[in-house]
Length: 141
Image (cartoon, rainbow, N blue to C red; front, side):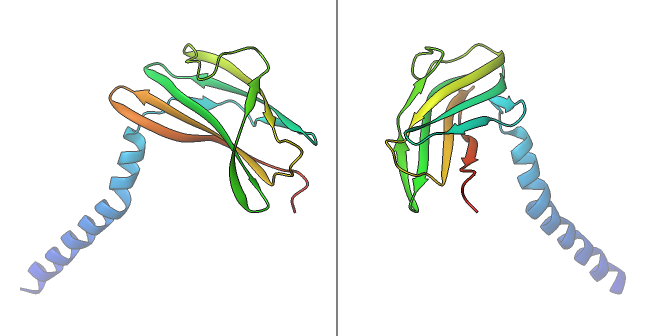
């Protein structure tokens, strides 16, 4: 009887572990990854704009739906406009392989604590929303 209860207890503990740890890990591994960063993005913070350059590898099978930029100024999130410095059209779906993002984020003279780059991709039948990167203003302590 004691052995049976101990076996049941171990089974329940294993199920809790599986649901709490293994399931999220498996779900994360099965989520498509549209790209991977190659090194840290470089940002040049100027009074009216921030230039951002980032290298990444675009993965096969995912298509860009949208790219957007947001920033936090005085604790308030805002959507920011940007210009692609290489002349790439807005929401351009790049080919798989090595790529470089080279944009100027227009800050209109406002001080931003951080700037985030957001992507939405269609990978097969799944939409994948990701923060490409969040850049922290070097003047923030």
